[in-house]
Image (cartoon, rainbow, N blue to C red; front, side):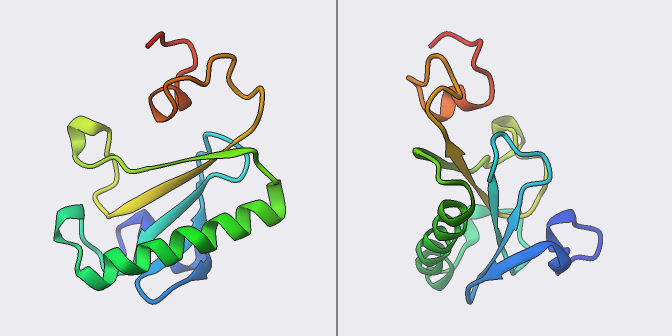
Length: 122
């Protein structure tokens, strides 16, 4: 853990698996937006161990249960920004689980490309 990293703040954790912490996103794209944050502080997704990759599947399932129980979305976008050019602003491996709701975007076609900016045509 890195005390200067905002994602290393375990006080924000609402659940965990062996390798991951789950927390509500402080700047949600939609109601129920959750982050899955690797416990080991590392900026590089490609350095994840096999155990971390496998446990990520478990963490995504746990996030879905938490979000479903509290928000009942109709769909999901799951993604990660890898590298500054892709929009990664915090150098710590994390995955976004973004619940989607019917009508939250007039043109949902394009999925993850359109979740942040519904005005962009694809």
